[in-house]
Length: 187
Image 1 (cartoon, rainbow, N blue to C red):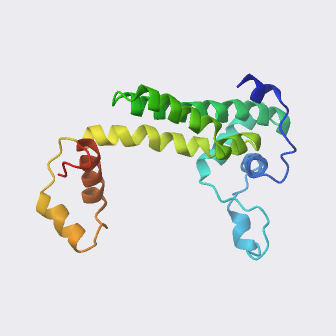
Image 2: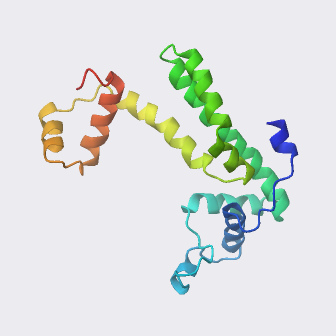
């Protein structure tokens, strides 16, 4: 972690995170980051805004709070990205430790932290750890919150038999109940 924070990042211009900083600047100047898509030629990659707006707003907010130049902005966000990466590893460990699989949890967390994909994303300061972290937090909470909700078995079976999983409540509650009781016990 200390090495990551002390080693200067590679040239980031041309990377997605650089364009996230640019989109934050555009928001501060009153531009809609998605407006360029409408006027552009989609055949050529002109680094259009493709992420959901939350990070662009956070980029603009951090710039408004004083991180106007890219190196300072990047130094701040590298710490945030690393924190969320470690947070995902901690959630992996906790999820496995809950089932008394402490050693497997440690190994899985270490694998997460030091796999090729994670190390590559950290080297280019990619923001993928932010959107990965939140489903890891919400999924267990959803599972616990829906564990005691009644779901008529015939309703779920009818939806599954028809291949119709379009009713999101039936699908979400069914998956949460299935996940909370284990694969072998069913509903």
